[in-house]
Length: 135
Image: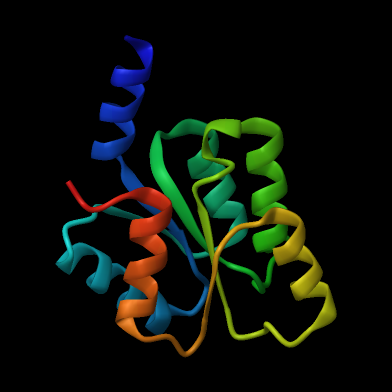
C-alpha cells in the first residue's frame, strides 16, 4: 500500500529544476509546463538543496556546472546520501560533456544527460524515461 501512495505522491509532485542561466530556466520551465509537468525552479545548487531538504519531488533536473560552490555532482551526491528515493530520478543538463571530469561523473552516477544546446524532444525523452509521462 505504501508503494501505491508513494507512486501517487511522486506522480503529482513537481520536478525540481536547478539551473543558474535565466534563459535556459525559462526554456526548461515553459517546455515542461507546456507538456503537463509541474516545475519548481531553483537558480542555484544551494537553493536546490534547500528545496530538496524540505519538499517532495517527482525528480530533479540539474545543470552540472553552476557557480556558488554547489554544482550538479554535489546535488547528486546529496541526493544519494539524503534522498535515496530520488537517486534514480535525476537528469543532468550541461554544455560540458567534453571534460574528463564530467564524463567520469556521468559514468559514476548512471544518470542521463541532455547536452546544451538541446532539442525539446531530447529533453522530453530523458524526462519521460526518467520520471514518466506527465499526469
